[in-house]
Image (cartoon, rainbow, N blue to C red; front, side, top):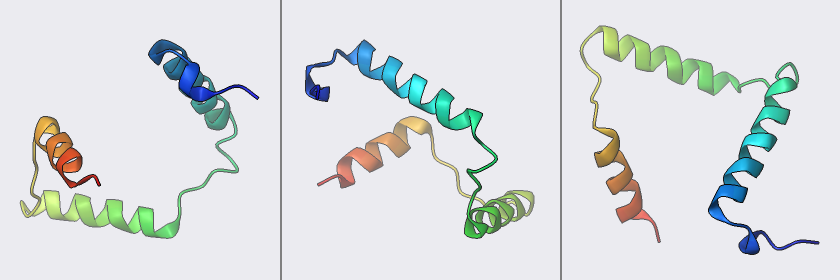
Length: 69
């Protein structure tokens, strides 16, 4: 078995892309859970009613990094 830690950044990205492409080809068996559809509908409703809060991608990444253990 190989060690993922030994792969370069570029090799890891290529591996992720290959895995994603393979999973996407079988999208019929990969269905979103019902809560996801409801969450999307709620987000769209909030946006349409100007009740949605948006942050920049940079701000979102910083928030996630700062909250990581």
